[in-house]
Amino acid sequence: MLQVDSITKRFGGVVANSEVSFTVEEGQIVGLIGPNGAGKSTMFNMISSVFPPTTGTITFQGTRIEKLPAYQVAPLGISRTFQNLQVFKNMTVIENVMVGQHMQTKTNLFGMASLLLGITRKERKVYDQAMSYLAFFGLQDIFDQKASSLSLGKLRLLEFARAFATEPKLLLLDEIAAGLNHKETQEMSALINKVRDTGVTVLVVEHDMDLVMSICDKLVVLDQGVKIAEGTPKEIQENEAVITAYLGADIDEEEVEEEAI
Amino acid sequence: MGDLLQFTLTGVTIGSIYAIVALGFVTIYSVTKVINLAQGEFVMLGGLTMYSLTSAGVPYLLGFVITIIVVSILGWIMEYLLIRRAKGADPISLIILTIGTAIFIRGIASVVWGKDQLRVAPFTENTPVNIANATITPQAIWVVVIMLLVVFLLYILIDKTMVGKAFQASSVNPLAARLMGISPKRMSSLSFTLSAALGALAGLAIAPIMFPSYDMGTMLGIKGFSAAILGGLGSAPGAVIGGLLIGLLESLGAGYISSGMKDAITFSAILLILLIRPSGILGEKSVGKGGL
Image 1 (cartoon, helix red, strand yellow):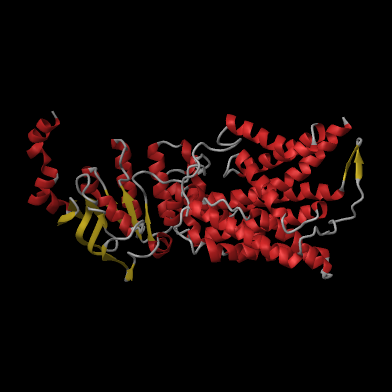
Image 2 (cartoon, chains in turn blue, green; image 1 turned 120 degrees about the vertical axis):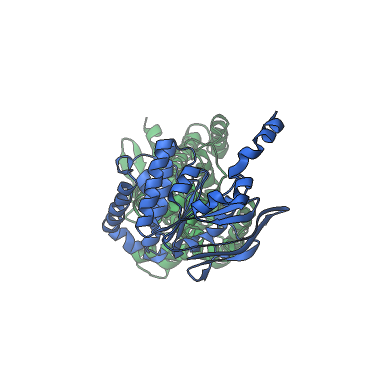
């Protein structure tokens, strides 16, 4: 479904990703993990066309997407959330989700006169649809609150709901559980599974190992911009390179502590 | 007492025009972060196009509609030919582009319509009405009605339609909007077209009172811009309040102090308000974020 092929991204002299390749198959939940600065978010930004890679190709269902502007990638069926939340703050919860449905409502500039006449019916339909998305994510009770007044956990759910409302084929979740407590994280895992069951393929960047190990079908591990392993959670847990680079950080713990002092 | 009422009525009338012009500024600014200094030119084009149409014998109402359409198309062309080509330029460069456009439009207008003030017939029979020692012309009432109508229609468009939601979204968070599949080009195009239509409406409403000429856009543009700043750039309700306030300051200043000093009085007051509230009456603290 998604092929990432020898992607390199440089920011000036810094190489954020170097020759990274992996694939995501339809219906999977794939996790992209690695220590801080491994280049996970950079990879995410390229897949969602926030910026283009320096070299390499990204193919989504047969279409090359690495050079398309973001607003053209979204209609192909890729949607995402952000680690540092990008909700529409002065809009209400339901309005945020309705913006997500923007693509399903085709209107052009010149059809605006007719649109003004048909507002109520059309808006009603979108509104009802948005409400059902909110119910799916358990946000129906706060639909008319301003997004700026929500707690972090609710904001993460809202971003998730908004991304889901674009009816994507591939959903990119950027540290969706960051800052959530244990219970919220578990609920999030259940939600991700529930979303996958509706037929959406999910790619997650995540620090929370419990979450990743429990829900992912496949993991891709990055370290300092390079892919060091790929496989099932079980394979990854036993992978030597991964253990030394990342999970096995406790081997170097004494050194780290000494340095810290 | 009669004086006060008279000055207030005059102030509200001219203030309504400033409010519509200011809404034009806000519409473009909120989505593109460009301050379109050719906004006053749209107003001038509205008035003068109407003059040509009515002199050519086009029925009033039809002329009204055609004027709005023509000026909207010009706004669309301006965005398409200039702003879009300069994509990636920072807002300051784009603002300079709009100044150039304004001078260009003014130049063409002086050739087409000459340099004299022209007379456009009022919407309806224009016998002044007396209200408690003050007189008001029906056209002045029309101006206020049009302003209220504009505010109402903008509210419906922005708040009640999907296009409006997309519009708000791109203004609040351009990045997230793009990722929702909202084309920034379409939104930029829409903002200029809409803004030109607003300018045309202001021009149509004010033409019978002000006698339009090729250079009327400059002063209206500056006053409208001041109104937008005063209200808090980017805030639509602020633009309306700012416009009305400037109109009132101007007419009260002219009436009670000196008509020659009216602009000095108005702008001193604006300066004073901005010294106290630098982000405008309804402005948010952080402006200048986002953009195309």
